[in-house]
Length: 281
Image (cartoon, rainbow, N blue to C red; front, side):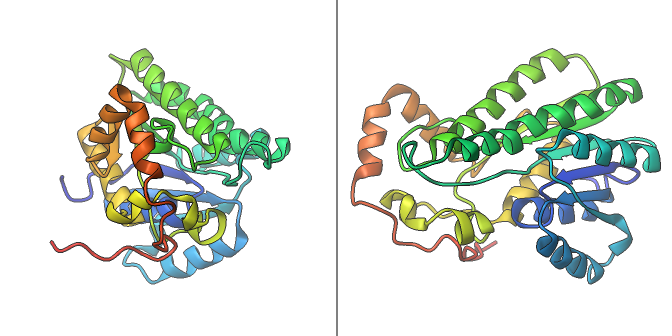
């Protein structure tokens, strides 16, 4: 990958002040991009600003608070960037609303919020930037899916599974529509990502199956690196880790067997709120 291959590129990241979003923002800036980050959490934005100030290129970051489920706010944020910078070259749709509860326990309002943040916002943002990307003859749209949207084995939130399945279908269909155009759409499907608010605040590690203890989780930085490599290669789908492909095949051909395996041994005992151990290079 060429050094600073995103130089002169204007990048946007929703839900970008923590976890995968902030790791991706840093990776985009390291690749030369000017990065506009939005997040709903003032606390996360404050932390990200402080961390950005310590990086070699703090001037590459711009931060704003935005509730992406509010169409007017999200479109206003993107329109402001286009007016200020002249265009948007990279759109990373990363924001998510996470509540992990059984269907019988989860309020309808939280199910609706899950879809508003995780899917509707993708539609709002895509419709806001795609026409100018096509006119400018360049652009990348990256949508954050999940292995949970492909493999239905229980233990997950039905609302989260549904929104990620929707993102999967929306992105892959959009790829077919954009075939032959200069705009690249990419679907990212992480597995277990440790060391973020996803597990620290929203999802008890005990909701994960016991087999998750034996599959090394990935870090936000690993996902971010895969995203930027995917941009450089114009990849269609990125699974992190790549071994997820074997699980998809197994679920497709023997879903009952995979569901049985995930029930073996009860719940996970690891704390996925902690950052994963660094892999040896």
